[in-house]
Image (cartoon, rainbow, N blue to C red; front, side, top):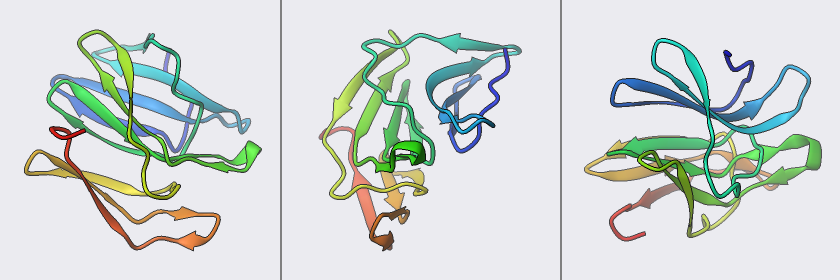
Length: 137
């Protein structure tokens, strides 16, 4: 089953593509995870703590995926939450919250750290650069 979603996070981890979250054409937000290795397949992750969202950002490092922020427009929510998805056992781990809620940020890895830049929230556009060190969190 192909995901019919927009504004989710799409990441390459080893030989597979992962797509997390997003919003459907009907405006319904998703917390689903899909993996592509020649075909799309849904992935079940536990515990089910990842709230449906779009506009989040993320990066992959080793066999883990890190997800930050996002929004649920239908509920007027912008998230400051951070998660790690361990792909070895498909488990979510809650990480420390971001200093402020944000959606539509950009993420990249550099020197084994995650850089989270910009985005927006209810107060406007953000111009901050956050550095996330997975080794310390």
